[in-house]
Amino acid sequence: MKIESFLGIILSETNYSNSSKILNVLTDQYGLVGILSKGCRNIKSKLRGVSQKLVYGTFHVYYKENGLSTLIGIDICDSFSHLMTDLEKISYASYILDLVGQVARQNEDSQIFFLLRDTLVKINEKFHPMIMTNILELKLLDYLGVRPSIDCCSICGSDKGIVTLSSDQGGFICKNCYQNETIVSEKVIQVIRMYYYVDISNISKLDVPSSIVFEINQFLENYYDRYTGLYLKSKDFIRQIRLLDQVIS
Image 1 (tube, rainbow, N blue to C red):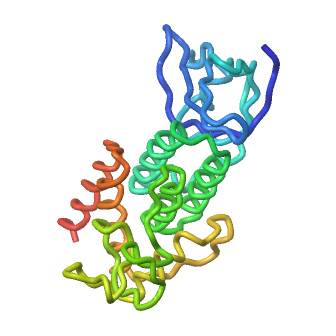
Image 2: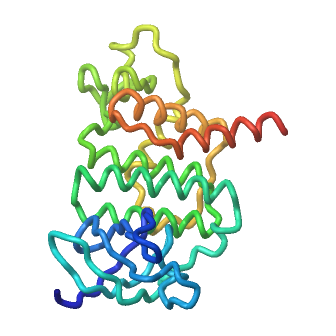
Image 3: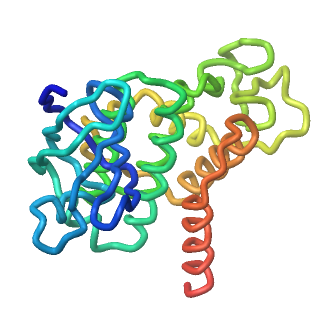
């Protein structure tokens, strides 16, 4: 096996033998890579602190193309210190890791890594975790092959007279095709297009009314349920946290 170095983010970790872990890592070069972290569960191991979910850094490994690579060490790029102290943000980050892991199994495009990294960075920079998650969710639909129609009517293809957004119909609906779908505001239509086209790494300010945020989030939840076939327990935990917040407030 040859020594390789690449950027990576640990999506999940599984205990292996008495003292090791197998790390599921999304990389900038090789997509998903399984990496054995030998002895990392030992208290004195130099790999102990870096062999855990959400670690982002430059991985140095004995690389095996069609098998399990072996970890040598990791140079941390970002510890996500603000994110790690907030339960809501940690919950969104866990869901994001799960979601990206599912998408990366279906599509090996290297851009998925950078979308994940940039989203985590922005959540760590205290941008609204639901907005950042929704932006990522919308962009990932491209890689699942089920992008909603947000440039024209999903029924007739017209880009004129768009009046609403429907998960059942697959995106925008124009006034000529509208039947009895719930009408959304023009702001929702504008913001969801912004979500899709914005470069996450360039976001410096996000000022979206809470009613718009929750409306778009509901559309994306329904859309994922209808078109992707993905079910993630980490998403249910986020829903439970939101319900608890509503009860408390």
